[in-house]
Length: 408
Image 1 (cartoon, rainbow, N blue to C red):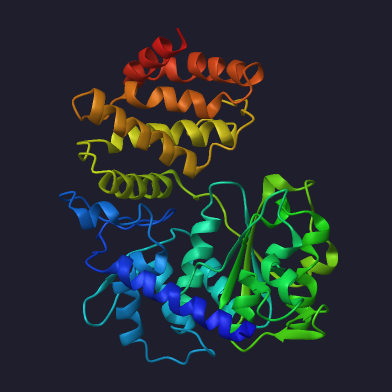
Image 2 (cartoon, rainbow, N blue to C red):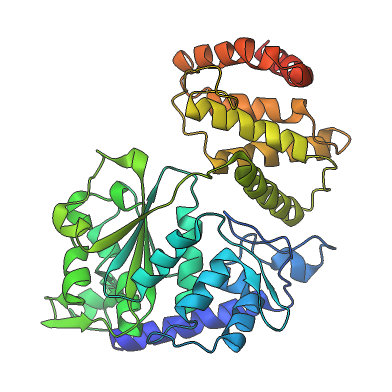
């Protein structure tokens, strides 16, 4: 079996699995921005119980992708499922001429999405850079789903990621029995993407050891992957490209070499520009997670969401919202993703151990856990914020009391 045949077989298997997973699944109208969609609430039948907790983007949003493909009359690059315009619409949201509503997957500057999509239509790879919690993984997954219809060609970067994860490995039973051959070769997600003209993804690129990172240089510059053991190579077909993500906070761990950095067009994903934008992101995502976990909707929960977002923005920015008080910042990132986690945890507390109404007491423990990462320095930062800012706000008295109870 050739590498191309292996890729095609794998693609067919993935498509079949997606079709099975997507059967009977409806995409909720409240689909959101930073994490995967999940089925809406309903009776837990056998079929519902067997559905994935987090379907891949191309499965969860299959209806939207199909509607966009049907309405898309613009030119498409080779092997793209949608035109660049339709890909951007899929990520940013909109309403199609037939009335189909495309829910936003990313809330942020439109130009950032347009640059990212345009990069994938060229011969340069795309590097999504930003602090933790800025939806880099989420954006990369949805870009791959919209462009190639398959977001699963993924290499997860860690300190232990081997070169085989990017290039190829071997089936050692076959290798020992018959020696090096195509049948014994195990293609990596990158090799499969090259063979079938799809989009590959590399998560947390700067966590991968530098010598392993550099195995991408030939792939990205020459669009070929040598197989010296066989005296052969795999050449990328049209449609192939690669999306990598990296955290700003990881600088100095395994910095990209200048040779590799030149092969990428870097797009920086910022934190939400305004408090209201961040509140909207958190509310959307929490609503989606709550429905996937079949938690009851929390009435008037937006007030607590706004408080969580305010605390996070003030502490990470080092100044209160009114600009009057300078603050010390803790060691953590206090990202939007962490705010989502705090509110989701609070929603679960309110549902299972309260009356279903999200209150200050449901979120303060999560806030404390997110803020105080270093027990020495961060606790001082939190106590100063609590006494100089929270205590002085008349409409935050309940929040202050809840914080003091947790501290005690």
